[in-house]
Length: 81
Image (cartoon, rainbow, N blue to C red; front, side, top):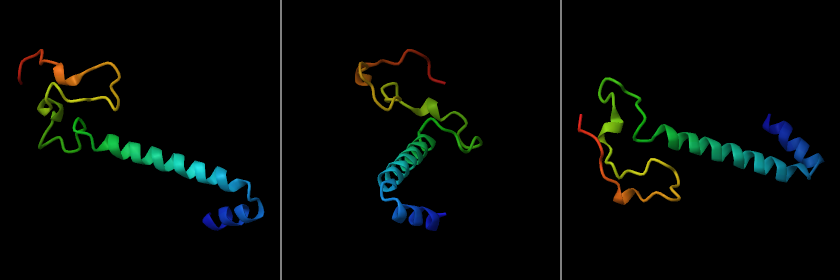
């Protein structure tokens, strides 16, 4: 398949930017999925830690980008389990 892409890129040089941006998008999506899979709120082994989100502090920033929320000033509003 890579040979076919290389041959098409040599015959049609206008495809090179398109191939570059497609590869960049696929790579970015793959890195984001890896980031989501390694988050502290994801459980891969349910026998050792079935609820990992209970160990996070109330000031932990869950969102990738928080525009209006200041997580440093939040207080815990529930009991410890």
